[in-house]
Image 1: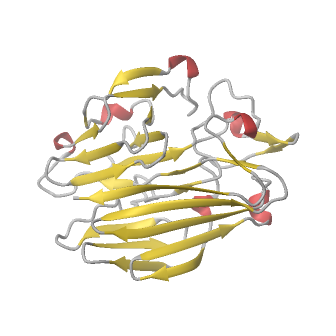
Image 2: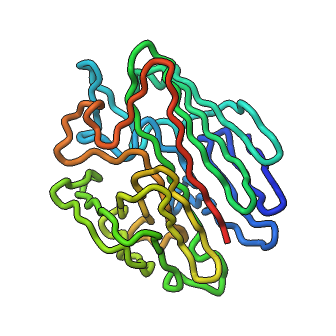
Image 3: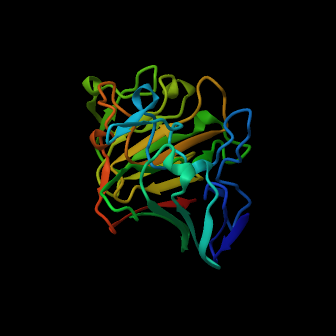
Length: 288
């Protein structure tokens, strides 16, 4: 089921299917900022990545000596959510563990996804609660895709990605979607002219400072994304397909490294929660 939220500045929609955003529009113009999920390119729009970001080495991880397999980026994006609360400008979706989730993730949890319109921006909040009788481990992230170009008079070559900090730590991927620890390097955070070849080796992955702002724009219209407390961002578009979107992905986690141990507790950027505790994180999208 789809839900429409609006304030004086914005109108958005979100779905109980995967709790993903489905539309982002400013009320003062007709531009659709969110990619519309064309299956010939990529059928998702803004999936939730939980209980892990990216993939597991050899497609499995272990907890307490038991092996679990899971689809890339976890099961949350494939799940049907309940609506816990809804107002004119805010909605909270809820996903709880079930026998189906226990097949790939052995913990009891509650995952809440909240979209809130705050002036001309969308605040996206994720909350994970440990409903188990033991410590749980998890990662979480976002994968929103934004239309490029936003208007018919522009093309990919008109766009660039800029960062609000001077340096970034970059993670390099291998051919299996794992990152290579030995290839991690610190680089200058220069503007990135948008080209298809940027994504020849899969996503660009950067470690960032808190509240770094990432902007994707044609210098007239675009997206400004405040990372909040997310330590990593993935930037991706499928290569070599000429897909009409770019993903800006705030992450609280990362795909496995090439030297992964398969133990979930050893996963880089893993989060742990004691019994009854909650973890909350947020980021903000501002279309302009």
